[in-house]
Image (cartoon, rainbow, N blue to C red):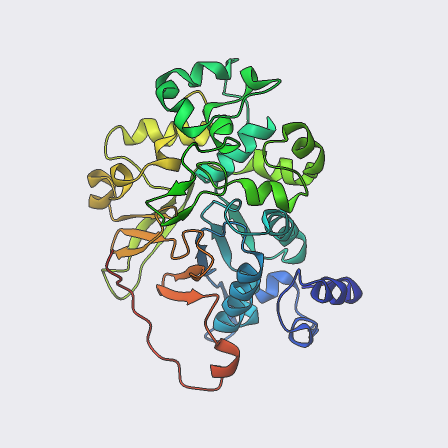
Length: 368
């Protein structure tokens, strides 16, 4: 997989590739095409299916992300892991200490793991970070003054301490909220103080060496490749389903979106998400709560599986998966799920020590 062994060794030394270098550097003579094939019968070659990995919210926790990445490879084995489809469910920044390191890790993956397929979904925190930096993709077919997104939520401006300064007229509502400063600095829902703003964004500023609220300094400090990463995040991902022996885990299609889908106007939501239409002050499939919890009935009837993060919980049903055990808390694990097997892997799993032991079944249903 790696054409330059010295580059891999250096990346491993820096902690970008958090796996066993000796295992990574084993060479074989197979081409990428041959590695994606398996023998079936006498000389018949058929495509082997990629496994799909859905990774929950990271929220600036680089060390946990590295551990999870290592555990996923140990769980799957090198061959299956390096050809997997990996769907990151969004919210890469804020709360944890190293947003900069997380984005650096993510932007490096396509080069370091060229046989994997990577899907980077946009979360509400990522949307707001991009909005403050001024790198939101332009709404399709129109020019918008982002000040038009403020009006509906203006009564909350004083309580949320929206950011104000030069250029604020060109900032989407969520960008101003992201860099603001809450009037009451204790978050009763999370049971801890806000990290300055309602988005807990001060740690993101700190990871780039910039004081909270310093827009000019942050724009200068964030590398262009990080801005490009934020600009290019997809808002929704669709892929074909998987038939399994268990009808409860079979699905005709997978739809991944950060928070979920409302039951009303599904086609309209899908179109808006595909176009990345930022004219709305609040994008419910990226930021909603109870209104996006369930799979819309029409999709459920078609056995479509909707996967999201965002909610700070694990919740598994036959047609709905919510994978966000961390919620951005420092003391909670980051979780990922392997599909179609529905195997849960956490950054805290001790897979290296238990590799030689018999695998133990993992629960697939967690109450919310």
